[in-house]
Length: 507
Image (tube, rainbow, N blue to C red):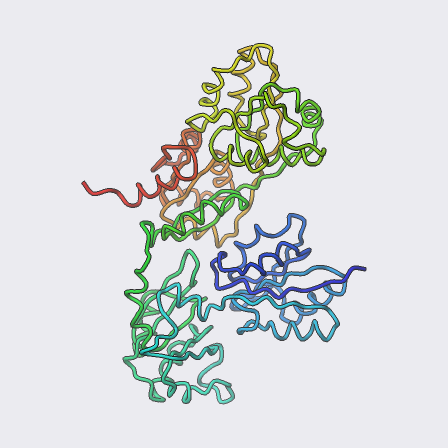
């Protein structure tokens, strides 16, 4: 039996971009992933397709597994020789019971490696524009759990001593006892007018924060309806928030945008939107699945060097075809120098370039009709043509080239299959400002995962932005209103359409 290992990985405070490089590498290696409720769902695209996923998350009043059951499961999986990723929000050793899990693994003789993560105690205030230290105000900070009841006799937190500390006090898991904590600190001498902040869902697309004073923070939280998960910050550093929170805000700051692309493709769009200040909700409703070495694909690969024209209609098609070629021991050298390679747009051409193939034809518009027009300059009568496409792609190109006398092999190399987002992600999406659709399949599958009430909310809630006319037509046929359409059917065009919609120019 091979040697097992358990990685205790800190997933960070919620933003998937704050996972460490080492954490990413460990997650990609894992045979089994045990994940928590907070800050882990949007990391699932990094997991191997064949990895086993086990939800061990805890929420107030419920738990999928008890802590003892989770620890025992980690030990058993490690002893079975599995590579296990234990994903924990924040840092594994900051109020995460990671130390208990590590001790149990060591005692059982299971190798364990701790991968530190960004704790919400620092990450959430930073995302809200609050520095936990500031030379002229606070040269230190203290982090405590508020999960204990301040009124009980045996709690470990010494609130009287904490009140007397001159620096920043950060309380995790304290929202349920906020009023009692504030009253205890004030009674022990901490000024009632000291600045205070509450930050809910820090670093995530639905981050909310408010500032008040120690004496008013409990009332403000109730008024604004903030709840868990959240952290509390008490200290003069909170007064630095207004200017810092506004620093670096882009044109989409404060706006929430839904990305419905497949997880493997979402990062480019999500990253660009976040760089413009947007809160991004990733709600993948499709997954790209190569169809494998079907008899039709086998025949096409046997003849790959004999085609006169090869047409790729998407970057996914490029990667799927390249994958099939690799299985057969083929690569760019298998193509003839005089073959015409056509890519539907720059993203498809870039995917070809990644595999060492230069596109000869790239139409100015990124739709099938434009590809037909671009190929009019090339003779087709009697020519052999390979089209590598998605299962549900329109037959526009194949039909047009056959009409011109070409012998067309129209080969399916991948398909889009539905994904099912969690109820929590759907709820976030329906409260967003914009929902993006990058293909007709994202429209149909989004509607497929919603119930009747949610479809009604979608029609009246976030404004739909489409990547191009075909996707827009699908959305309208489904009863959605398309608020904006990309001028160029690519990711930069989609982003510009969102900016134009949400930040209209003054006249």
